[in-house]
Image 1 (cartoon, rainbow, N blue to C red):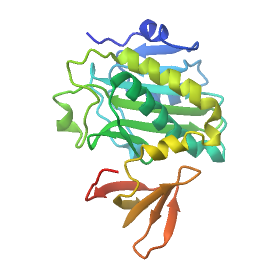
Image 2 (cartoon, rainbow, N blue to C red):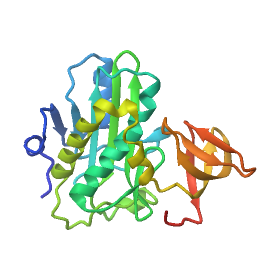
Image 3 (cartoon, rainbow, N blue to C red):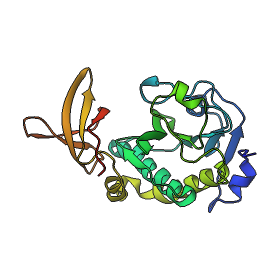
Image 4 (cartoon, rainbow, N blue to C red):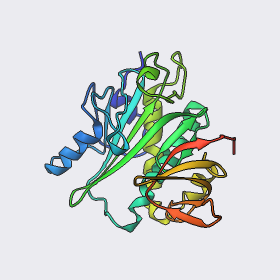
Amino acid sequence: MDTIDANAIQAQLTSSKRIRVFPTLISTNQVAKQWLTDNEPTPDVLIADHQTAGYGRLDRQFYSPAGTGIYMTFIWPEMVIDESIGLLTPMMAVAVREAIVAVCQVNPTIKWVNDLYLNHNKVVGILAESIPGHGVVMGVGIDFKSDATRQQFAAQSGSLLPADTTVTRNQLIAAIINRVTQMLPTYRTGDFLDAYLAHSMLIGQTVTLKVGADEQIVKVIGIGPAAELVVQQADGQQKSYTSAEVTRVLNWTEP
């Protein structure tokens, strides 16, 4: 049985981290935010085997069954919330992707700004939430191995590995923590952006971009120095977006 175990994770870490593992939580991000708001002592990483009300951007439901997924939140009480905070989520995308490549031997791509896809299916969602005066939490939800019920609840969701994989969730969790620990001190420099760009699934693609209530069809041509999405509009003009959503990739071609 692939049981998430704090001791097994700790044994694989390259630096000391406080980890707490729960069988079930409403949401690792929600609990972490409450702890910060209440000034409670927190671990560095909170992990659950199952979430009863996992969520992503715009409060969308994130299906979080027991036994097959990874639901973890990094908690940074001292994180300074400044103009570079927008680089934190793409940094996490690169860190998680690199850990997955090393441990799982698969090669996901990054959908701006906070998802990882494998074989055109979403396998990882990342969500940063700030609590002014208290810090930042960063949730990572991973569809680790196939689950027969997942497609019933989450369209276009996939999994990193088949159900009979011998790779454990503890291995991947430890690798993610190690990679994040390495990258976090310098994330404000954007030193990870070359890797982010190299593994973007959107560069060169024509997409539907939703900005507020408006949608437009644009071509993605780059990722800017603040991790903004750079697009070419229908009239040929270029524009950058720091806050928008790619809702559809049209006539998908491999980069």
